[in-house]
Image (tube, rainbow, N blue to C red; front, side, top):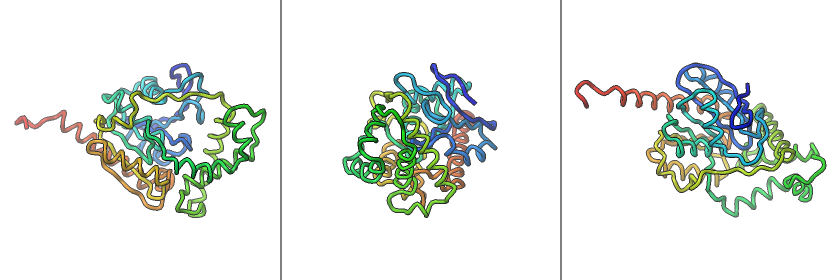
Length: 297
């Protein structure tokens, strides 16, 4: 399905009834990464999984992109006044921005291996990405793809970049790709192939973040927050989970072993149960606050 949001079309799936829950995918993926959660949580929630503008089945961006504004626009288009927001990687960062700019619309936050808008990645991580990911494509061709000056995109280069990125983030620096379930691996590589193919062929866009950025405003987050961290994820991404769980008031944290950047695919049952428990606990808390005891306590 697709819906009009701010001059473009956003691709999404929707199922179930109950408190609304919206899933925002990782930058290395599309909405298919939530396939297990979409199926299982629709038994007691109204579940919506969507593709970012310029990703998956959503239309290409025209001009600047403001992802948190798209998320709010999607909620408006689907007549969802409030929702539990779940985001992975930078999808978590965009959900976090919504919680800052429109806290009254966020029932809870679940941040999975989350990004953090405004956070500066250390030089050591930048060097490692160049060595382990970018070197999979000859530097001259990669530069042409990234600058949108190439006349043709070589499918072998797209495949090489997708495989390298998957080794770095889906397997993680401490595991061999053979340790990842083959079905998970294949879906991750396919999603990454589509990410790079589209990034290198679509027109260049500028992504605008909330100002001032979320990194300096974590103490303002009022939504009940669960931080989920993959113990085999890139260490610098795990450092962001540390920041989120330490600086967001009353944040809870769950560390999951034997998974890197995509726990919803690698450990679906554990992630689904954590999300459901967090949502239901939030709903019980909201209900108790709106129905005080007769004695006024």
